Structure formats: C-alpha cells, structure tokens
Length: 544
Image 1 (cartoon, helix red, strand yellow):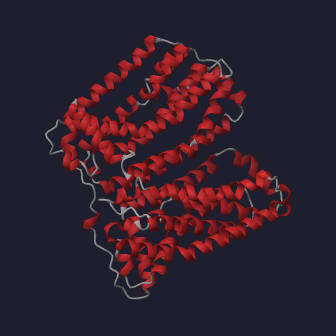
Image 2 (cartoon, helix red, strand yellow):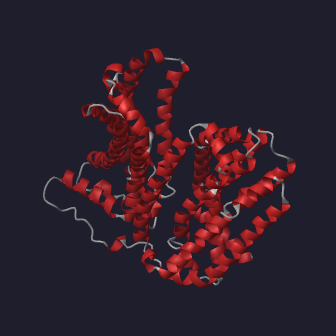
Image 3 (spheres, helix red, strand yellow):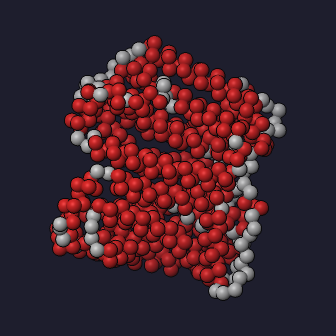
C-alpha cells in the first residue's frame, strides 16, 4: 500500500502537477478554473433538460437510467483514448518497469491517473442531474446519500472493461504497440465514430423533437428506448438504488465493481508487463528528414517543410489536422440522412432567398462566426512554436526573415481553419439552395476571423512556447497555449456580440454587423503586423 500511494502521488504530479508550490502547478489550476467556467453553459443545459423530465414525476427511474447510460458512454469514449496513452505510451514507463515494485502496483497507480481524467466527465453529468433531481422535489435524504457515491462509482465498471479490452488487444495484436500507428488509426476511427454518433443523434433528435411524443414513446415502448441502458450493466441497479432508495441495488453495484476490479487486476498481472515492455512511443526520429536545401523560393520551401512536418508526424496529424475535420464531417453526415432535408429543401427551392434577406451580409456574418470556431478548433497555430521543441533557437537563425516565418506558420493554421469552414458550407448547401457564388462572402468572413484567431494563437505560443517535451504528443496534449488562445478568441467574440443584445440593436443589425466586421479586420491586421516583432524580441531576450 505504501508503494502504491507513493507511486500514485508521483504520477499525479507528473501528469497534472496542479499544486500551488510550483509555477506550472498554478498554471494548471488556472486552466482548470477556466475550463470549469467554459463548461457552465453545458451544466445549465443538462440541468434544464433533466429538470423538465423530473418534474413529470412519472419517469424518474427511466430518465435517471438514460442519463447514467449517456454518461457511461462518454466515459467509455474518453477511456478508449486515455488508457493506452497512460499505460503503454507514457514516457515514465521505461523508468517504472525497472523499479522494485510489483506490476499490480504500477497498474493500480496508472489506473487512478486514468480515472482522475474521467472524473471531469462524470462531474459534468452527475452534478447537474443531482441538482435537477433535488429541485424537482423528487429527492429524499436517503436517495441523495445513495447518489453521492455513484458520482465516483458509476463509470468505474465501464472504465475497467475498456482497460481489460486494451490489455487483451495489446497482447494479441502487436500492431497497435507503435504509438504513431496507434494515433493514426484511432484518429481515423474517431472521425468514423463521430459520424455514426452524429447520424444517430440526428435521427433521435428529429424523431423526439416533440417532448409529448418522447413521453408517449417511453410509456408505450420502454424496452425499445432503454436498450442502450442494457449495455452498461451497472446503470439500472445504480439508478434504482437512488430512485427507490434500495440498499440491495446499491450493494449489487458494489459487487459488480468488485468483480470487474478483480478481473482487471488478474489480467493486468498476466498480460500488462509483457506487452508494455514492447510498446514503442515513437519512430518519428527514424524518419527521413525533409531537406531545407531545395531549388526554388526559400519561402515556398519553408512552407513545404512546415506543412509536411504537420501532416507526416502522426501525433500532429491526429491531434491537429484530423480533430479539426471531425465536426464538419459529422455535420455533413447529419444533413445527408436527416429527414428535415426532404421536407425543407423543396420549400426553399420555391423561394428567392436573396430577395428576402441580405444574403451576402448574412453569409459574411455566418462565415465570421464559423471562423472563430474553426480557428480555435485545430490547435495548429497555438502549438506552432511549441512543436519546435529544443530546436526553437533554429527559427532565429534560419536564413529567412522571421516575419515571413511567422506568417508561414500562421498561414498553415489559417489554411486548415478555412478548410473546416468550407466543409461546413457543404452541409448548408444540402439543405439551403442558393447560388454558389454567394459563398465568396462566407469565405471572406471566415478568412477575417480565421486570420485573427490564428494570429492570436501564434502570439500566445510565441511568448510562452512549451518546448520541454520528449515526444510529439506531449507538445500538443496539455498545452496551456491552446486553452489560453481559445479563451482570448472567444472573449473577443463575446465583446463583439454582447452589446448587440444588451442595447437591443436588432433594428440596426446591418450597420452594426458591418462596423464589427471592419473592427475585426483592423484587429486582424494589427495582430499580423505586431506579432512577429514582439515574438522575436521575446525569443532574443529569453536566450540571452
């Protein structure tokens, strides 16, 4: 037990480091606070949704089961990617395997680190559901007492099953033991799964758009609506222990957890160490390096090097490029299969949309809004200097003007941001018919805000690059610059939008929109011009 506590504490500091004694720890705490603030609208949305359901006082058990099942699914999705990174591809593994501690101790400590990552997902769902249950007047003291332990227990069996799945897979299929290959495969699979989820949610949202219809369906065919609950075998017992204040059901959930934990520890002792020794974190260092000495423009060659490094490095490709494509591809899939397309498009085809609204300005505004979203999504510019790592000094001495280097890095981030915006346009055209040349206004609006967001990201990462990393994944993951750039960008968006609603300027929306677009354009130009000088000055001062 002593070895377990010491190792868990050491792994916690290495992975999270959220303590007040170190500068990095204080930054981590600030990032967590910012993340919680950003999630407040999500808390409110979940609270309102469950409050309306619990106020019916007829389907408390079914609503609780569905809420827990959706939460377990999110934890399953998260654990599928977190577990291999912590157990097989972490940099501390080669040091832990030679320590005089048992394999079970290593496994148990690493599992705690995985579950801490999942507790944020659990709290996002469990806390609003609890508050909604109490506010609806359905909760007794005993049900609250049974609910509180479930905040920590509801996702444990699911997480353990995922861990068992990966340990067996890693032992039987050595193909997955290469981190670069693993990142590429899981990145592609995540896009596929996101499309499936988008299709399912689109169909579900259309079929159950009317709350009365949803209630009737749940009453008439509860088995059909509750099939998903059966996948997570502890959910029904957990929900029943709360709604019916049943000690027996609570003990059953504890028994299920104990059985899953025993199987996990048994298989970990047999399978984990042998497969963990063979896992390889990266092979990128063995790849042929791209030569900087090529004929043609230095500017073009530098851009090629940056682009190839971004797309050929699996960690960057999976976490920066593929992640930015998930959302637009999911929207396209949703628009293709949703029944509303068949109902709405024929009606819109009979209407001359450009004559009814100021379509160029509307598309300009829509493009600017999507540009804010797309620019903050990929993290390419927000990690441009961090990805240089220990070679950051190279950018100061490469025979290319530093301003051009910054512009190239920013241009690549802007390029992928615009790609995301253009893909979003496809889903719009599936439903809304209008001439294609109007899309130029959408692209213009997206270009203005994409340039602004990527300039802010370059500015933030240039002043505080994360260069102390041992493999490419750590240059992207847990990078505070991505969060900081997101907060700054969306704060600017809030400053632009809030006065419109605060002062009820809907009668002057065209003038206000044009004025704000001009302001954003000026702000983008200022950031583009000033950022290279400030970053170069900072880098020269930090190296001296």
